[in-house]
Each structure stands twice: as C-alpha cells, then as structure tokens.
Amino acid sequence: MQFSFIRNRVLLIVLLFFVLALASCDSTLAFKPENSVEENHNLIVSHFQPGNHPIQTKIFNGLASDLHEQTDGRITMEFYPSNTLGDAGSQYDMAVTREADIALSVYGYSPGRFPLVTIMELPFLAESAEHASEILMTLYEEFPEMQEEHADTYPLFLFSAEPAQIISKDFKIETPDDMKGLRVRSPSPMANKIIEALGATPISMPMGDVYESLERGVIDAAVVPFETLYNYSFHEVTNYITIGDFSATPFFSVMSQKTYENFSEGDQQILDNLIGKELAKKAGSVYDVDGKIGLETAIESGAEVIELEGDALIPWQEALEPMVDEWIKERTEEGYPAQEIYDRAMELKEELSEREE
Picture 1: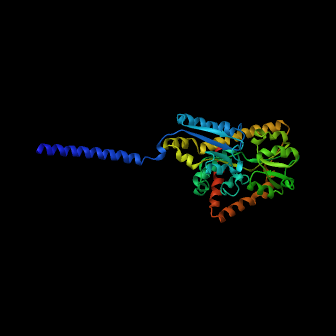
Picture 2: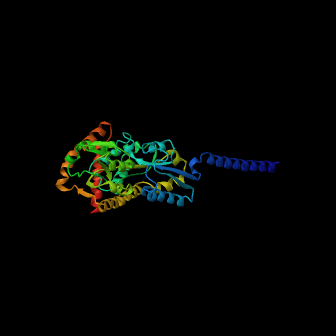
Picture 3: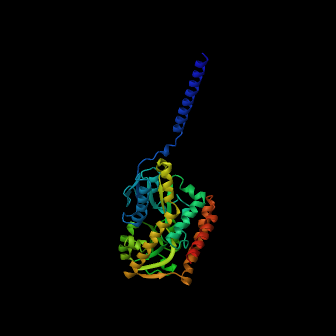
C-alpha cells in the first residue's frame, strides 16, 4: 500500500513536470516576435531617375546585391525607374502607403513637407555632393526634429547631388545683374527664392524637361548640378556655366515602415548595417564623379565657364545672405531649433573642409 502511494506520487510529480515544460514551450511560442521568422521578400523599388542613372546602377544595384548575398537570397529588389509607378512628387507617399517598398526622389518635389531638410538648399553651404550628404545624414542622426519629419517611413539614406550651378544656352552670367529678367528653371521652393533674390523669374520644371526647354528658349537658364551635363546630356544645349555653389538638391531614399517591420530581426540588422551615413556618402560621391565628367564634357563641347571666386563672389553673397536669416527666422517661428541646426551644419562644413586639406 505504501509503495503504491509513493509510486503514484512520483508519477504525479513527473506528470506535473511535463505539463509545466509543455506550458513553457507554448508560452515561448506565443510570445515569439512575428518578425523573427525569416521569409522571402521581393522589394518593389520606385524612383524618378532613368534606369541607367548611377543611383540605380551603382547604389541600388549594389545594395540589392549585398542584401541578396547576406540574406542567402531571401531579399531581392525589383526596380521601377523613370516614374513608372508614380510621378516624382508622389514617391514619398508611395512608401508611406506601401505602393512601393522603397522610394527615392527629391525633397523639393514635396514642398512644405520637410522644412528642416531645406537647410541643404541654402546658398554656399555645400561644397560637394559627398560633403552635403554627410552633413544631411549627421543632422538627421543628431536632431530628433529631423527624424520626426520622416516618422511615417523608414529612411535608408538621405543624400545630396553636388552643388547646383547656373547653365545657359544664350546668356553669359557673371553678376547678379545679369540674372535680372531671365526665366530660370528651379528644382524647389528654396531655389525659387534664390532665383527671385537675384531678380530672375523661377520656372518649376522636372529635370527631364530642361533639355528641350533650354534648346527652344522656353527658359533662359537653369539651376542644376554638373552631373546633369553628363547624365541628361545638357552639355549639348549649354554654352555658359556660372559656378558659385548656389544651392544643393537633397534626396531621400526611404522604406515603407510595414515592409521593414515584416523583416525578421536578423534581416533588419543586415539591412541596418548596409544603410545610413556611409551609403549616403557613397550616393553623393557618384554625383561628384559624374559632375566632374559633366563639366569636362561641357568644356570639350565649347562651353565657357565663369567661376565666381574672391571679389567676383561678393555681390552674389550680399544678394543671397538675407536668405539664411529668413530661413532661421521662419523655422524658429515654426518651433524648431533652427539656429542650433544651422550652426551645426556650418560646423560640419568646416570640419569636412579641414579634413580635405
């Protein structure tokens, strides 16, 4: 009788042990994060650049290759360039709504939506695309207010083209007075203000329309980076180039939040290791490389270069200096730490310039 009681008690203990172990397993499964399961993803990538533009051939293709390799083929990319899925101004919203998993475009095509990013468009701030890209990504990393502007997407890399210059087919532009009365293509609202401050009339126009507009005289000049002389063949319709680093054109490449959340934790980490400041600098550098080619190509085609340096630059600085004060005033009134952000941008500019010396 006693032996039977002991045996039953042991069996009961063993049974309880297995029940608790099974409950523990079920609990572990129940609380297992949804994104811990590694799945396959074919990412739809939408952008406004032509398919042969280096932003796709060198940056996106490189990112796609690295993701494919490091995820053992789980993540692939399918590209839709040249506004195939939507126009340049709708790209950001396509990532918000997940019409595209990844979208890339120019901030200026979404006026008023990213007030702090417009700092990169202020005159004489950017000296190269790589420097401008590093400044932009550093400001994004350091200022929560800039992060909040992108809160409805998952930014991959924020970057910039090289500084914009003024090109013209028929007008040699050496002083601000030479701009008065001209119709000048503008990429953004900030560039509109720059053009207006110089006495010209801004004409908002996508890059793809500039060639024909210059050729036919629809516009008299255009504010564009050097790389367009090569990548958009503007060297064929450009006889004069005025170099003054008048503005920079910032770009975004963002991912749908839902797409990112659907990745496993491991794949999220792989992606995070491939994006950010270094990729932004690399994206900027392709514009610098193509910018050099574009300028050389234009010169070989007979374009005359007017480089604003020293005393020649002073009247341009005097004409455009009030824009900085206006930007700081407007952003401050909107509740942003504008002076702090601007001071940090100028500090970064100096640091980068010293690094190159």
